[in-house]
Amino acid sequence: MFALCKVGVFRGENLLKYAFPGGHPMTSRRLEHFWQVLGEDEVYREGRVVLLEPVMAGEAQLLAFHTRDYVEFVRKASETGSGYLDYGDTPAFPGVFEAALHSAGSTLKGLDMVMRGEIDHVFNPMGGLHHARRDRGGGFCVFNDAALVIVTAKQSYHVDRVLYVDIDVHHGDGVFYELYDDPAVLIADIHENGRFLYPGTGFEFETGEGRAKGTKLNIPLSPGAGDKEFKEAFNRVIKFAEDARPDLIVLQAGADGLRGDPLAHLQYSEEAHRHAASFLHVLSHESCGGRIVAMGGGGYSIENCSKAWMAVVRVLTGI
Image (tube, rainbow, N blue to C red; front, side, top):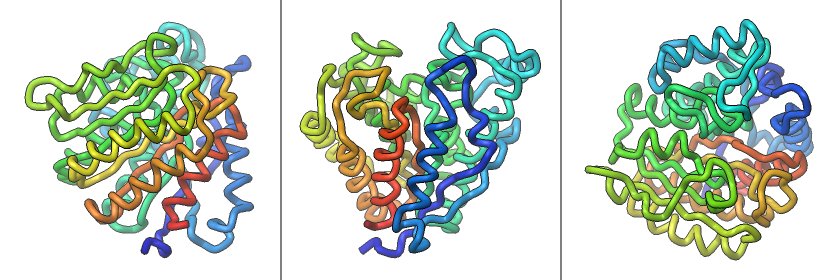
């Protein structure tokens, strides 16, 4: 039914610049290996994937979510190339401001292309930086492109209901809590239990507040959980998502829940990503004209990133 879907995938040198120095786990090799595997896959050879050049976000676009003081803080830290953008996980380096602008700008460009019908679905492997808050960075994340896409979709494209699904091993606190009281943003987040893993958040009793009560779903999993437990958890997401009746779907497809990731303890295979993307792909065509913006998120095993992200891209092309 979806055999003719075209998926835009961002690829370019400017995304490789979002990589922290000194042996930091957020390395450009994650993207390089993914792009190599993508180029050898049938979905690329058969023209189902369109490669998109990264673009920079403008300051006005950033201010849809982030505070002006924080944007200026990042700009100055980028000029000096020293210090941290959070409490010790996210170091500044020369050019970090421009690198982060390319990550955010590319995801926002993908949103624009999807909303205008120029492409069916889009994937930014250097997107999904879901820990950054409005006024600070966190967890390797400088500007929160996931939250920017959600806010921009509502403000600039008059989207009424956004479904955000986050399957990164780490709870997407920067999206979840900053939009906790927004009834138009439906959030489902499957992650490793915060008692064992950064950022230590994402509890089941947190379901939104005020008019947004019931629009947020946290599903923490115990260390060692694998595909079976993921699929059981995702059954709850399916019911939640179907009831949401979204006008846009945003997927954070972090690969750090796969077995062997050096920073976490879950045991998925890429089947978890295939399973999640398959449902969301069908739902997007049933509910919102196929509008999906997907992002790579975390993942610190190079091979696992390629496996998980290729599973998502292949599903979105209709395979």
